[in-house]
Image 1: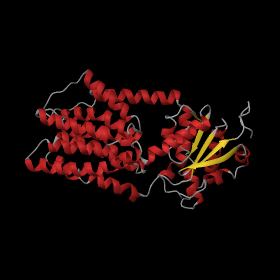
Image 2: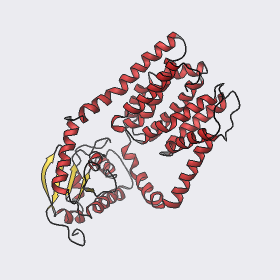
Image 3: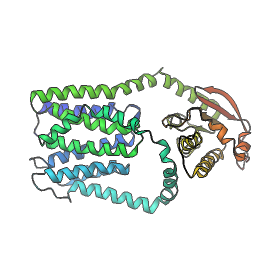
Image 4: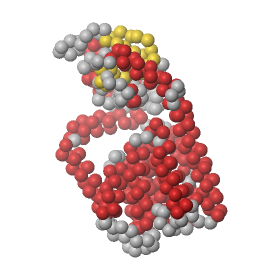
Length: 402
């Protein structure tokens, strides 16, 4: 992207991209959307050169760029919108008719083919068991459209005028970045969850787009781009600062995690522990902060949000009995290893629209099999909103008594 720019312009553009990748993620560092942005930015730089007058590598470097981008895109099927839209505009804008079968596209194609073969050959349990189960309850994590669209508007407002300006001036780099932006917007809307990390590549690509115009064009364009970049930085950094205040040493979240770690060390140091919640927190990061074994297959209990919403009559679903059966089977599977410590979240809403007051334990206790296992546990003091239960007798050689 920095071709044809001065050294100072190149430094500024790279600095904005680097800081966006490093700082904006905060607690979402390493999420798939973050990895997508890291993997795709070199591909966007190459695509912007493809539509410009400069000649660029068609060999090994482009192939590697394509492979890296392909790995990022393969993380979620929705991400395919990014290279599809970028390639569309490469074909439209290229001054020298761009061949579709270019090195970077070959690289992405190789990754896609490898991924497809690996799924079909080695991941049949995932395709035949996990995917149908996830599809059955995926709707329960959806937010109302207003809660999905409002944060998107806030993040797009500073960049939107420059998207229009890029197309009006036929700015190749601006159009390529806009195409990538359209792709991640599509991914965000299709997922329909409104999670902050789903917005992350939108914020990153918008920042780089604004940096592009802050380092090129006339004085007015540069000034407006700097102002809009400052606005976007403010919007993006408010939650980052809030996260840091909670998670810094001595912050509320850090202290809570320390209490959870201490409880695991006291009650499950030589055994296993289980955290029952609709949210990955606190299973993550507690599971990586302690040597004790986390016994569940997942970092949250998938079916609980659907159960809570169906029982609160905020959702109607014809397979209610199957969903509740899966929720009970899930907890029985986790308890089969006899964890020494079980924590149960009292907030059943969290990042869903489900009722916060839904009693997870009361739901499980409707099942005689669960009640039989649960006689081996007694409640101890809470940690914040998490009820704690410890196993009161050693695990029998053949597993827990059912």
